[in-house]
Figure (cartoon, rainbow, N blue to C red):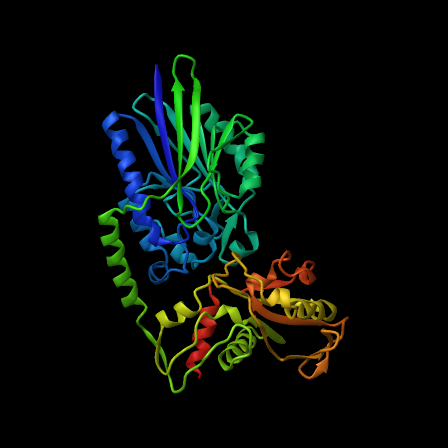
Length: 457
């Protein structure tokens, strides 16, 4: 006897809800066919469904995302870093209180209190033919960030060492929801006896699932332009998977009307929640991504004072629009600074600070169209400084001297610099690759500092 099992999954939606009605239209039609044919299916999400770049997710702190997953009848989800490290601890702790699906993540738990009742390392599902399907979830171990929020994220391989033998003993199939990235997915396939890996985090896309060491790996890119499908045929006589196939399915042009209507309701609620007035501006603030502006100077000065750093630097591209005269609401602030980016303060030697400023001032850096690392803008733009000046030689196009608080920076002295957490990652800013002393301000975002800046303007 042979049995068909269908797996559908979404990953890295990042609250791009404009595609959600199309995803639901296609999945619902397919699921209805499976129900009519008496075939088993699972609907799963691989994390980063939430992204506070969208006003609906911002206003509800991810609760609207859970409502959408409930309405879509998902079976299980895992957490991505956007669920894990962009929400205040208490909000994450209660994020899935009303979930009508399972939440599986084997390498995350609170460090100071008991785990929320909804958090499980894995879940075993049983088909009508008594095939047992184990689904285990894993999330990217951003340890420093989770520590700030009193969550303990562990080595995913340590957890796999423990749980895979248990699942292999209890289950016919093992499915891994991996929010770890492409290379970790392949390592897992080469190391552990798992059947399917549904991948994400690094936003890679497999138009057709690939097989590594007998494991089927599928991935659907980012933002909901594709959803994933895996078809497994189980041969019960030989007790094995006789056929396996997977693909990333592009979303259709058609939409699910009920989902559209529900999203409109959520949007209305979000607009109401974000209508709180922050301040009333007596004059407008214009912005330019490639020139200094008054609002960016005020913003960076506020960041320096807010963190208590010696100096601060922030890119002009972090503000997407300027501000008009009159009332400024939370929605206005969110529209202009939607990035899930945290303030960060780091200790640099004078030499590191000088090299960092030189990189910041390079034309290549200013014009770089950054994607990811929390940045949701178009281009990095001109760096604006607080308490930092420099001498620039326009003939050689080089910075000659850097000053902090009017005094020349000593290469051997330590200084504290406040900036966005985005610029604390070594691959983006090589001069700070050896900097170990960094403080991330969490759960605050840059827009919280911007609100304080505006309230004083």
